Image (cartoon, rainbow, N blue to C red):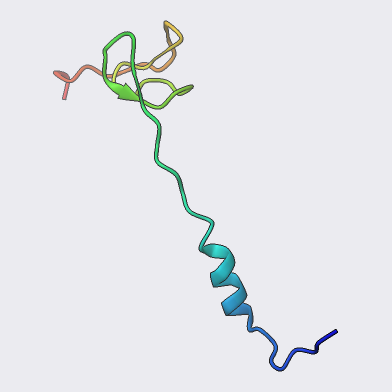
Length: 64
């Protein structure tokens, strides 16, 4: 078995591994209530509904 001539530095090993640790694209779906884009399995940030129920109390835009 061959011996190594140089020890691979930690930074080179980490950068080689980090090349494959990318974030993927964010998936969005259309909210069935307000038809705005939202993330699946999350409450809608526009209207505050999740699975047909109001789960987040939203403020009126006119009460500012």
